[in-house]
Length: 255
Ligand SMILES: [Ca+2]
Ligand SMILES: [Ca+2]
Ligand SMILES: [Ca+2]
Image (cartoon, rainbow, N blue to C red; front, top):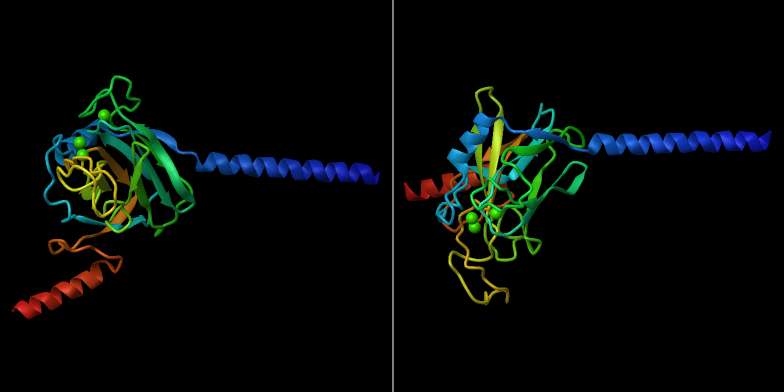
């Protein structure tokens, strides 16, 4: 009798374990989604920089990307591929909530993009919807793996070349939904820099700083607007409030 009880308990335990594991995996898996054509066209027109066109105001971001969070009231985090103007085959991941380095596009190339590849697997506007694993206020960070070599985050401090590699824009659609559009630069170094970077010993890649190497649109995030930074000024984690105070002090001094 005791033997039978043990077997039943073990069996019950095994069933519970398996079902909770499979439920967890299923709830975390993203759903494939497609961006509405009108919005895709709009984002391509407004936010995809011409190939090799230097984006001179990359340090004057509309959006302070260090403040990206999962929005209060959002049902899901939806990430859509808008375009790519890159010869490299890049990867993109995000971290936030229960996701740690979640790779959502592992080969960013398309037959229909600015710099197309015949065997590119992505179609413009395709994306993923994450419905679990994020709570309102969770910070969300995106990470570009440049052809599997360097990885670049928002900001300058953590990037190997000390430069900005992401620009962000905010867009509100006709339904009142808020979008964050991110444009990434995948080449190492300052504009047109070549040879070895004396500061790091790494090789400059003759960057065009066009920030169109990957462009994505994301729904379900909120961010603080960036104060227009002084030239060369690095936005810290102190955020918009501290920035506002600093600007007020500067204005007062000038006046
Ligand atoms: Ca490009
Ligand atoms: Ca390409
Ligand atoms: Ca570029």
